[in-house]
Amino acid sequence: MPAAEQGVAHSRHRYKLIPRVLCFVTHGPDVLLLKGAPTKKIWPGQYNGLGGHVERGEGAAAAAAREIREEAGLPVRALRLRGVVTINTGEADGIGLYVFTAEALSRAVTPSAEGELAWAPADRLADYALVDDLFTLLPRTLAMRPDDPPFSASYHYDEHDRWVITFDDLA
Image 1 (cartoon, rainbow, N blue to C red):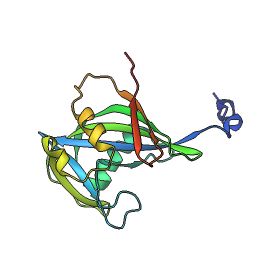
Image 2 (tube, rainbow, N blue to C red):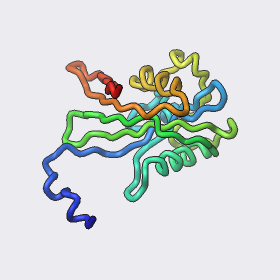
Image 3 (spheres, one colour):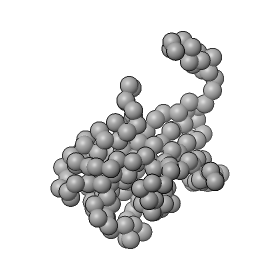
Image 4 (cartoon, rainbow, N blue to C red):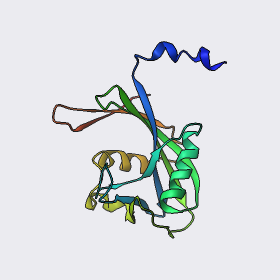
């Protein structure tokens, strides 16, 4: 199908999504978290998974693998799509977040300018200053079995500028 037949020109007024990836890398019972550098625009000093923007011409899985390499220099296996989240930012553009898990082949990480890397015990995540949505998203994602289908969810902000997370019931 030619690009002109995709209908994009007729959809300029519609809600648009910026694609991003979020990756939870595990090694045994631990998950690799990134404490955002103090100079970061978003979530400085808070722990998050690895991830970032999907570049033009790149698929979500390729972006996830790239972000893991760039932020931790870590070889992984079993990269799996675990969920898709639509984030309504209240602006004309929202975020389409692809959530992945992967298994690290070792614990040896390479630091990056993105922040400090830490292996966190999955049963002690409440002890970390996580980005707000991770208190809900991370345990749910880590509890998934290898053959579980990806989840679908949406976030929006309430009147107090807090995230409201809704998981779609696909059953």
